[in-house]
Length: 168
Image 1 (tube, rainbow, N blue to C red):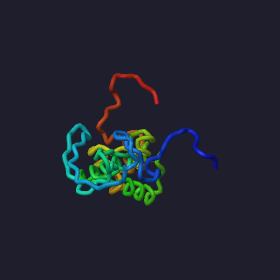
Image 2 (cartoon, helix red, strand yellow; image 1 turned 90 degrees about the vertical axis):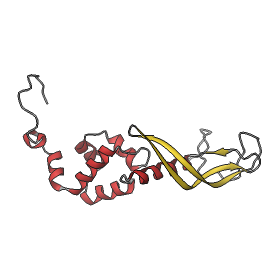
Image 3 (cartoon, rainbow, N blue to C red; image 1 turned 120 degrees about the vertical axis):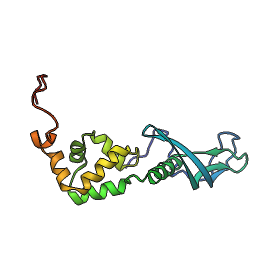
Image 4 (cartoon, rainbow, N blue to C red; image 1 turned 30 degrees about the horizontal axis):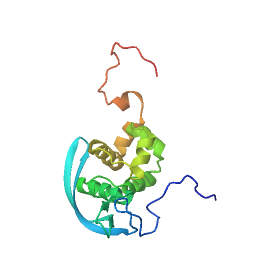
């Protein structure tokens, strides 16, 4: 194992107290606040309350800092507020079905990187994709249709004579 020489500081593991960028004192420590969040997701603005949000606060000047940990808490609260599947829920169902991220992505019609971001909590799926995942996980017949090719896949919704030549 080698030491990180990039100069990057991981604020998740850096001990407190930290130096305040506002007043320069080494008095920044974790604090909990009540927070009214406004987050835009899926084309809509969502307002919700978080009763205990962990932030960093300077004990000298009162400056408050939102960290990556704070952002993760807000993301988790938004997911819960909207009632969307959590990363661990998606991961558990993939394991139960014996599916890889790659296969799951192909069946849903999304990029594998998108599934990875959902599973790592880096992005939140839209309501439409959350609904599709629930139906996919809940019904074998849906999984069969999304795995099939040809007439079964299109459920009779597409006609063969579009007039546009293409090859697979």
